[in-house]
Amino acid sequence: VAIVLYDLAGKDGVRFSPNCWRTRMALAHKGLDTETRATRFTEIPGILDGTQKTLPIIDDCGKIISDSWVIANYLEKAYPDRPSLFGGAGGRALTEFMLTWCNSVVQSAIISFIILDIHDALTAEDRAYFRTSREARFGKTLEAMQGGREARLESFRAALQPLRLHLKTQAFLGGATPLYADYLVFGALQWARTVSRFALLDDTDPVSAWFDRCLDLHGGLGRRAASICQ
Amino acid sequence: VAIVLYDLAGKDGVRFSPNCWRTRMALAHKGLDTETRATRFTEIPGILDGTQKTLPIIDDCGKIISDSWVIANYLEKAYPDRPSLFGGAGGRALTEFMLTWCNSVVQSAIISFIILDIHDALTAEDRAYFRTSREARFGKTLEAMQGGREARLESFRAALQPLRLHLKTQAFLGGATPLYADYLVFGALQWARTVSRFALLDDTDPVSAWFDRCLDLHGGLGRRAASICQ
Image 1 (cartoon, rainbow over the protein chains, first blue to last red):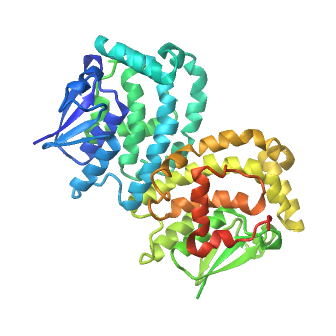
Image 2 (image 1 turned 90 degrees about the horizontal axis):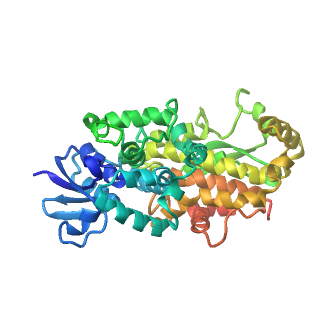
Image 3 (image 1 turned 45 degrees about the horizontal axis):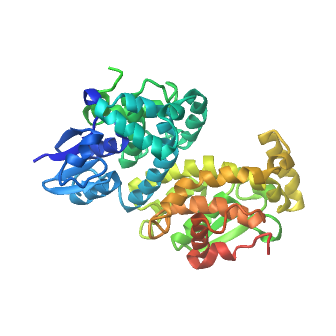
């Protein structure tokens, strides 16, 4: 029986959520059969027992697990014979640092580049919810948040320097092969790729070459994904 | 036979080098007998075969190894039955990311807070070498580099946010117990602690509490170290 992934979806089936992408890649890394269920923001209260607030959620034969980090740890424990997501206890601990780096440095910057683009990639029903909730959270309009993004690009790219330096000697954050740490940062960049035409990375950036490698992983799972640019 | 660590030294025996502290803590973590040899900048060309340029260097029964990262990998491989520095292959790979984060975000900022203080903590012979080489490298005087440091403190502290968030749920970067990743960032802060009175961290910062825990490790090795403040 396939594991069900409730996967955040926009219009035209676009799957854009960075945290859902982490989980999708983790399931593929483990080689687990997965059925994704496209779920719009406004559909979340209607799934399962109605108490869920955020995605991703997985349903593994009746075990319901939410929160991408909790899911990753569940998968690592439940499927120990499949390829490891962390590469051992030290890897798991340092993946938690990668998680805070990804959230506080990478994703918090990317949101300001694409928040209006995300809105535009949603279905009509979801747009109103997204605008209201995000404008309340950030205290400004989506247009004001995304505006002037070109001027912020240089500092965003500079903030990726630790990853860039790492990739001078390694194919992936995980070394010769990817680990969950790769999927954290991949998810952030895939978020932008699926909803926006704005170029976050310079083509000559080693981070761009790494992202290309990630798009090819697991049978090109990331590359085959629908995006608003298609 | 003890492993010999050639350890960068200032005046009054102060051991301040961040990269030497990484190695010193790694040796203690492995529980290896260590004899440190205080070595001034201008004494480096006179040690061993005379070809060495930088410290740390270890001499393990005739095996001469330089570069703190190479040394860490050597110790992990040569002493596999001692406590691991990386906690597995995934941990080792992600420690390389921590290394680039520490170098490019933490140490590159700290140098601008303490470069004149480092100079003042050196012996008279070393001061001329240090001033000439560093002013050439950075293209400005030590005084100009360190000047106005108070104004840069806020952005430095903000850059530690991923570590701060990690420490909300974990005692160490390595989890419940420290790994080499901890010693990377510890070395950077110990560098400042040994040569400078400038307070890099707010006392209420969780990073400060973590640094205190690191100072207590291995019998208080870091806390007992000489500093110019004593």
